[in-house]
Picture 1 (cartoon, rainbow, N blue to C red):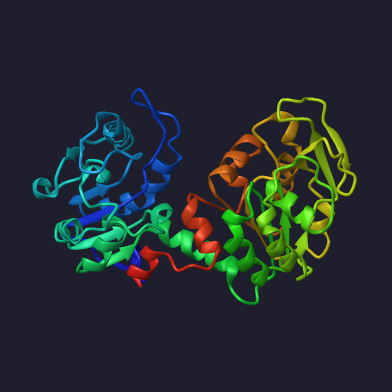
Picture 2: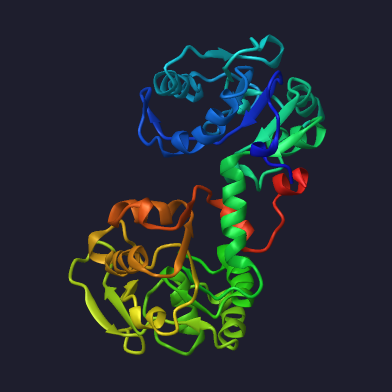
Length: 371
């Protein structure tokens, strides 16, 4: 896989696919973290050439049609102010100005999601070098994230993309000492992740609704808690590895709106109660600490203060840990920003689905194309 930092860009037409899919309300950008994350590659390119076209998607418009509410105009305005320069917004690849510009939301173009050859060729033929820096979309075989890479004369990974691949891969490399934490609501959505991490990790702590399924599989009463009964057999097989770490104490209540929360032992859950949070057991990680800790998913319904203690405690522990901590996923990032700061962690992935598929051991289409 070629990397942007190793290439000569002077005199070249460069296209870069980034992920600037940010929340926008009435033209106001509510969170600019993804915009800032794209800057290193953009600034690196602009040091050598102004002939740069930036490509991104925004939301889920009806493909092939322009929709003002999904226009990237607010994003272009953000970059104009940040870079202190004029930036043109183009609506097709035939009218690129040869200077810094954006192409309008790539999902307005017919054939993007279906990876049409026509659109992929159109994108690829517009540039001498095509840079893929949208790791968060690397699991999608779209025209701009797969086809254009395959059809380009020269394609490479951007700085953010390269950092994502290197940091996540470092946790999964054979021989590294790894502990993993996997939270979330369902085992089924993270089955490949847990399976792959069991092969790579010394231990895997489970939280959220996932923990409920494992607790029931281990023969414990879980009351009215969220549980996937059709996953109990698989959960039992995973428990047999001896690597799954179950919570020792859990927080129970009548419902998510019930503020009278009880802390009970994992084997003493009342039949009429629901497990809505778990107590993070710091001793599990402080004893024989691994070199690397990998975290994806909250331990409870942390958006509700009454059920945020487990995730809050976990974030506090990880932000001070001597281990290298790698975290990722949308809910995980939200939890970090709620209880701490991203810069307290060694690496936080900007990706959601791509992060999970990478952890699950899949080769992502964009990586396959770049290779």
